Image (cartoon, rainbow, N blue to C red; front, side, top):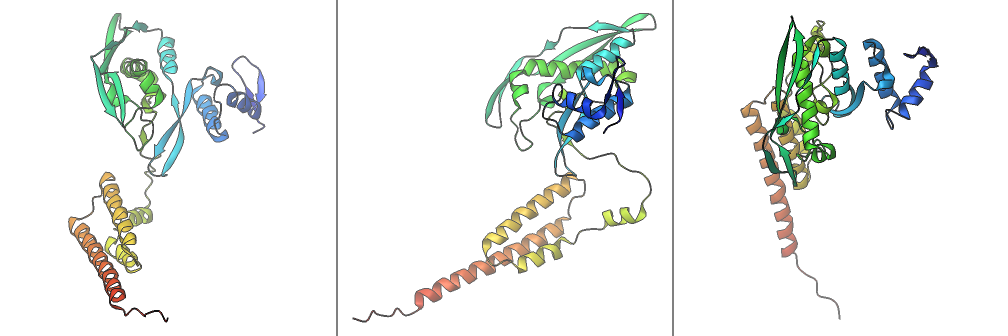
Length: 294
């Protein structure tokens, strides 16, 4: 953390000093680890970190089961990289489709149905046009991962946010060697992140462990045995439904026979517990009531 860093204007500061500057100016409230990622990204790409070419974007990571900070380029970096080629000839004004009004997550939202932007590049002696068309519903960021409502920025700036996403797509089309396979922070904010980089190094033992099927019947049978009331069974029903959905989303759907077997086990256990409750109620109602002694 005490390593010396040379800024673009030739000044030298320690990494700690630079981090403090970034956390108190360009990235207020960011964690140290996230700011370190910003510094590493800019160092690797030869970018001036003080011009804020990248952003810290919280994205839901399914594998980690939590929000993680990811470093994403901003639209300004795309524009800068395109301009540096000397072949960027400007862009068109954003063209928007008709407005639509929908209720998303209980909130009434009005937005442009689509946006179209054309970026121009000088290629082999002539100006070529690269047009991108993006739809609001396919790009907007949600306020939370469990709601369809747009976040504050996409609700307030429905046109501006979509225009930036469309321009980013057009710049990727026109300057693929500059933008690569990256996405901007405006495009990725509020989206899910499937996971980290996949290690393709052969690991037989690990693969064997991951491919081993889960014995759902034995798993839920053991837990149903420990259930002493119907509330416990209801909780397992919910967990089973979530397990089925997660397996389907992961491309490993559970066999229908297994699904029906586990559901049958739960229904049977619920019936046993309900009958036990009824039996106890009947026994209590039939028990003689002692008369109070005068």
